[in-house]
Amino acid sequence: MRESDSAQIGFDVVSKVILSLFTVELMVSMFCHGWKNFWKDWWNRFDLFIIVFGWPIEFVNASTCSHSHPLLSVDIGFQWHTTGLTLNG
Image 1: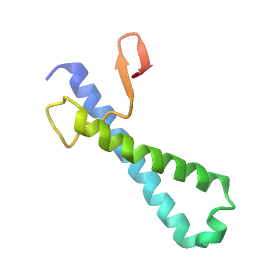
Image 2 (image 1 turned 90 degrees about the vertical axis):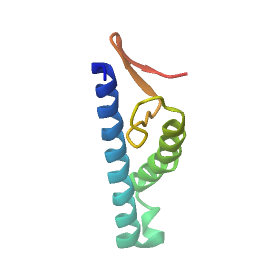
Image 3 (image 1 turned 90 degrees about the horizontal axis):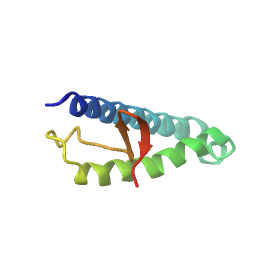
C-alpha cells in the first residue's frame, strides 16, 4: 500500500467518525428537545443538513471507490494532492 493510499484511508475513517458523531448528536438533540423545540435552534438545522447530505455522499463514494478495503474506502468528494486539497468534479 502506498503512503497516499494509507493517508486516504485515514481521511476516510475520520470522515465516517465525524459524520457518525453528528448523527448521534442530532438524534440526542431531537430526543431531548422534542420535535418542536428542535427546529428553533439553527445549529440543529445545520446538523441535519450535514447528515442529510453527508450519508448519501458516503454511500455513493464507498460504492465507487477503488481502495483495497471496501469498508474503509469512503471519499466525501475531496481528494488530497501534493499541491493541496481540491474538490473532485
